[in-house]
Length: 113
Length: 117
Image (cartoon, rainbow over all chains, first blue to last red; front, side, top):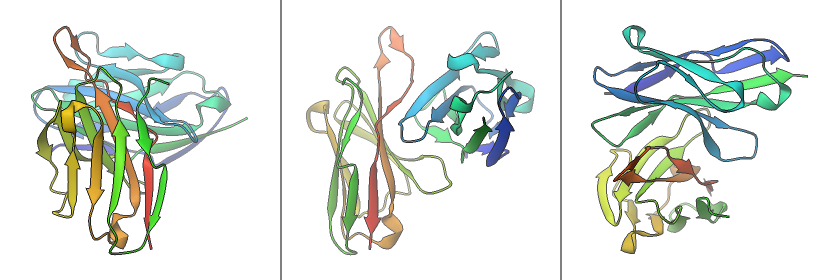
């Protein structure tokens, strides 16, 4: 069965620090990959997605993620975080042959001003 | 507001009661999903509709749970004989798939928080 593992449940950073959130998935076939973000009091919203092509994808607000197929990973990065990036981040995987999207448990990021 | 809406936002019920939640997807979206999210976890898939057809149900969805999407527009999720273990946030999402538009991006609603006492 598909599963998604997010390495860190809680991350605390100071403003301007660099961010990398790990995500690994288990599935042998072709997948679509997503990072969703949930800001305090707001809905889940899409940050970025990978379907095919360039494995380095750029999303909103300066976030990017790199798909490394050999490592089954899709890590999220941002070179310099801001206080407003405080949120919960979810990695998600969809089997291209199906419909179901599997989410990781989430990483809560707190950025100190 | 053209996003996904859910009603009610909060529901407190006593164990054994039935509850029904409503989801209104983005109007042109043909797929609608229900998820459940508990504290410290990501959304867990419950069921999904392609237009009015319910195409898959998770094993998480016991016989006490039923979902409908009449006419392929809004959807309802009913839980009968609620149990304390049903306490969670119930999320609805919609997407547009088919034709030239195949993004599979899901747009989420604000969720309905259910508390069973």
